[in-house]
Image (cartoon, rainbow, N blue to C red; front, side, top):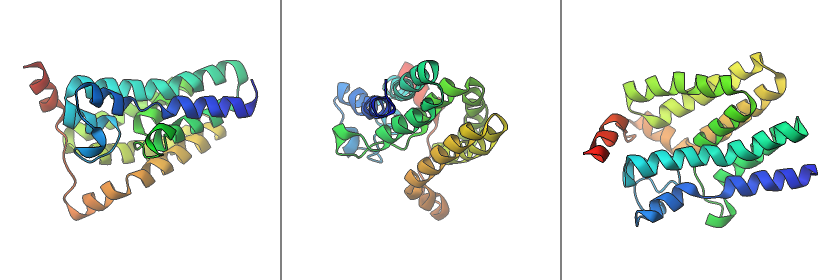
Length: 198
């Protein structure tokens, strides 16, 4: 398959709005509740643990699949496919190019290209999230750290992951401002899960 077709494939996979779909199944328009963001965290807060977790897993999977396939069959093209998949999530054609912030989809590309980076994400992100309860802060810090750490594995991986980190940080600009102002919303993941299983 040609480079252009791989990139289109990656973008279209990334464009599938799983977070929007999961919330809709619960009768919720995710663009009109909570932060209005079409992402797993907003689904978690607005629709509960199961839809939220499914949204995150599916958002990761939609970036993992095209990236992994490209890496397996076309080698280094996979780096561009990974970027296309994340851009598809950020700017989905199906939702008038208004998507999420790219954290879960970026993690999907981590596991496709270098699973070690994927596991490192959770080792850094989870403690920060549980301690601070700021998902946005945990995501920004973790993606940025891993963007630099990735250069220890390869230059190409480092460039890709630092680019993906930059994109996600940009998409979090409103969150960053709220963190500075002290009015960013906290997310107690443990409490949300407890409520969902009661």
